[in-house]
Length: 445
Image: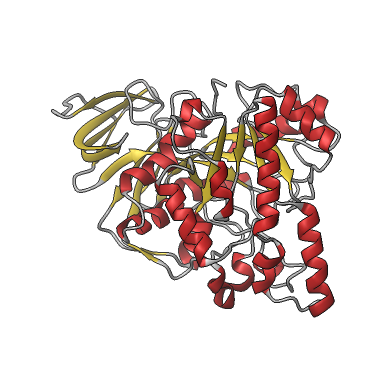
C-alpha cells in the first residue's frame, strides 16, 4: 500500500491534544512524532490548523442489503459513512432475508468485501427458534448477537423466555439488544387506534412506545445478563428511567452490562414532532426534553459507554404515510461526527469526550483488534477535520440512497477534510478514491 505522511496536525487522542506528524505504511500507523517526521511518503497531507482523530466506529447501522435496496445499499451507505468520518460500522440483521443463519450472514460479508468503502462487521440475528445457528457464530470475526426484544423494522421479535434464557446462558459473545416491551406497546397502540383510527398524530409515538415499555424490556435484559453473567450491550437508550441500570464506577474492561446512546435521542425531543413529523419517528421513540437532558447527563458521567447513529434509512415516500404505516428510522451516519462536534462547540460535551465515545470506547467495548486509537502499530483509520470550515447539510451533498435527512439545513462549524480507512485515503476534500475496499473487523472476544 502507498505511504501517507500527515504533517503538523493537532492530534486529539486518549484525552490528550498535541501537535505531531503521523506516518502511515502498509495500512498501519508506523510512527507518531511531536518533533517531526522527515521521511518521504507517496502522499503528504498538510494538516496545519486541522484536527487529526481516530475514525468513528458506529456499532449500529442498517444498510438494508439484501432485500431492501430500494431504501439503501452497503455501497451507498458505507460511502456516506466515510464522507462523514466513520471508518468502521456494525450492521444489523433485519434485512431480507434476515441474517439468522450462518449462510445468510456469510453472504453479507461477501457483499461487503466487494463494495464497502468502510471497514465492516455484521451482527448475527437471534429469533425464537434459531439458537443452534446463533451458537455457531464465530466470535473472532463477528461483532455480536442481536436480539430484538421489541418489534421494529423486519419483525424479528424475540419474546420466548426459554429462547432468551438459552441465548443468555449459552453464548460467550456480546449480546446487543433492542429493548421495548411488546405487550406495553400493543396496549398503548390499541388505545390510540380506538381514539384516532388511522389518524394517529406523530406526536403520539413517544406515548405509544413509552418510558415503561423501554424500562421493562431493558430491566429484563439486564436481569438475564446478571443471572447468567452474560455480556450485554443495550442499544439506543432513550429514557431517564433506564439510566439507573448502568454503572459509571468501573473501567470498561470490567463491565458486563454496557449501553449506547444515539445522536438523534441527544439532538431531538418530543417538541420536534410538530415540525419534523415522521422524519424523526424511530424505535425507541424520541421522548421528552427531560429525558433528553438526562441522556446528556448520563453520557457525560459515563453511565453510557458509546455514541452511535442507528442509521436506518427509508424512502421519502414511505415516510409520508400516516402514522401506522410510516416506517421507523432515520438516516444519520454521514453527519454524526459533525453533529456531535457541534454539540461540543455548543458546550454540551467536550471534544475529547466525543472522540472517546465515538472512537475509543466502541473499540474497547467490542474488543476490536488494533482500531479506535491513534497508536503506532494500529490500523490507520484516521479522520482529518477542519474546525473552522462551515458546512451546511443539503440535498446536494447527501450521499444516502434515500436522498433525505432530518437535519437538512443544519449548519456545522466543522468539516471533514479527509478520511483514511485501513491506510487508504478514501476521501479527501470532497473527492473519493474507491480503488480499495475496507477491511473485515476482527475481535478479541
